[in-house]
Image (cartoon, rainbow, N blue to C red):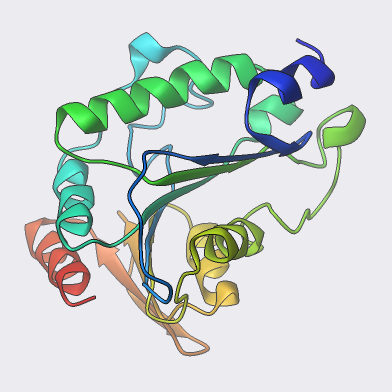
Length: 212
């Protein structure tokens, strides 16, 4: 699929940036959001997921999203997708995989309000071959884009991810807290990273979402 065709079929703001508003929930200005990485955080990471049939949700992630939904907290997925830049798959495959992720979440009463995906990577070709693109985590561009569109309060927002790049993107966007899947707790530059390894850690995350 060529870039022009992809842009006409999908919500691409530019060749390597997907911004999709999902559903019709309306949020008042100044609400904090729950930001989530996708692969390795929402679904089990199968190393550049490209087959919808292989998608499996991580345990206990649906209750996290459901808790945000219940509290009227916007849920935003922010995902790096360098596999597109590298030529492993295209936006058509991304769309199919992402639809499967969202369908599985809906089946577990978890609803996402926006998906932002960045395909830029220095190992890519053509217009996607950009190093350190502002939209690619650990840069904060995807969070800032979502904040602009949904009129979010970033300072009180939360981020959950499985890589330090997710936490760094949150810190650079002005968030103060994040949860790192299978990671370790730390504090850097006013940003607190909490680990997300067990039911006790999950309870802490759920409590933080309920407090928003």
